[in-house]
Length: 222
Image (cartoon, rainbow, N blue to C red; front, side, top):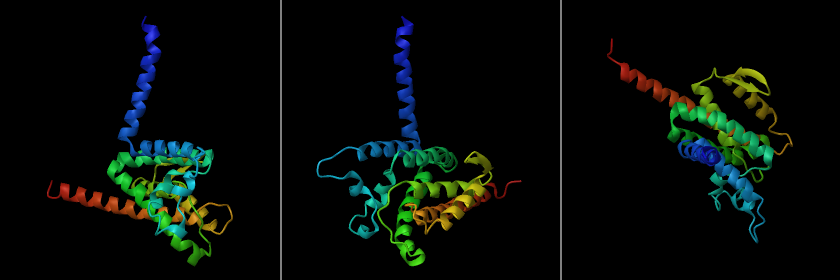
């Protein structure tokens, strides 16, 4: 009698946990939106191209400003989606726990928008690259990665199964992106670097505000 009901209770419990996770964690909500968008990319809409409508194209920056945000939720293939969401799951939830949901969202979307703007205005004049359409959450995730590094530089992470401190991992990725800027690998390295510097700035700003708050809180105490 009870065994027959157990599978239904388990499914309900799992569903409730997923709903709770998405409702309380911005990172999980973003992951869900990216997965939904990925499936929508594969739907053959009549007279409507989902990717073209929401991808970021520097040539249409002023006429399609919404794409500064919508491009973040699009991905080019399963592995592009998988690795971005995997990094966001670990680093995003870690940053949420340290600064709260509101500040996490501020870092994520500020880095995402400014990485697209950086990609637009830095690629051609500095690296002589003609910037084409761009999709993916990498720039925004780099911002989260960098902000978390400022706050917790000594967290141990694994990069291709090699253990290292978070600050060393960030430096490794920054150097890699810098030297790969002029490559033909179809990756927007200038967007990555732009998001990274935005994350560093916001991370140092949050750290400074926190330190100032702690000093004022304990000022005058013995």
